[in-house]
Amino acid sequence: MSAAQAEESAGATVERLNTALIGVMQEAEDLGYQGRYDRLASDLEAVFDFPAMARAALGRHWRKASAEEQAAFTEAFTAFSIAVFADRFDGYSGERFEVTGEQPARRGTVLVRNQLVKTDGEVIAIDYLARPDQTGGGWRLIDTFLEAKYSEIAARRSEYSSIVQNQGLDALIAALKDKTAGYAAP
Image 1 (cartoon, helix red, strand yellow):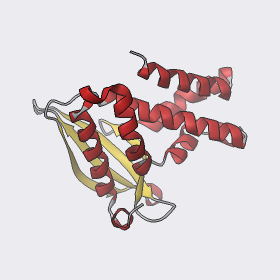
Image 2: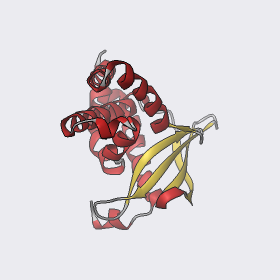
Image 3: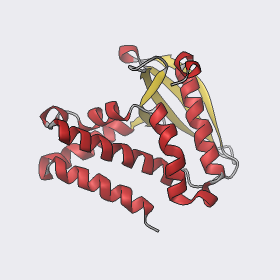
């Protein structure tokens, strides 16, 4: 993390993400899915705390998993998360992102209000929950809220819990790897 990133606000962290997303969207066709994935991977890993998100998404099952299972799940979760971004941000037609504010949230976190403004004026709220980076200042994103109410982590925890209870953690890891590979398939 650079000195400038260590000093930035939570909103500035989201601005960095927005800049990376717009850049990839503008080159989406030339990059293709794999190029978008490759371009976004380091940017997303710099702004999101994927290990913390993986723990939260796995919920109570995290404590029961071995260190090896936790590592395998975190790796699969991270790759899947990047794949979702590479798939969703697959074109550009003049959209723009706007950070509209920050508000304190629970346990020292900050909710960063953010929106995608389409060229027709439609606004899609994509807010982020940020917490201070545990490894050296700055902020890391730990959840995404679509339309200001749908937590990505809560939705995944619900989905993942059912899979782990019915089929086991190895099945969930395999399912995430399959979904990630499915995005890359033509």
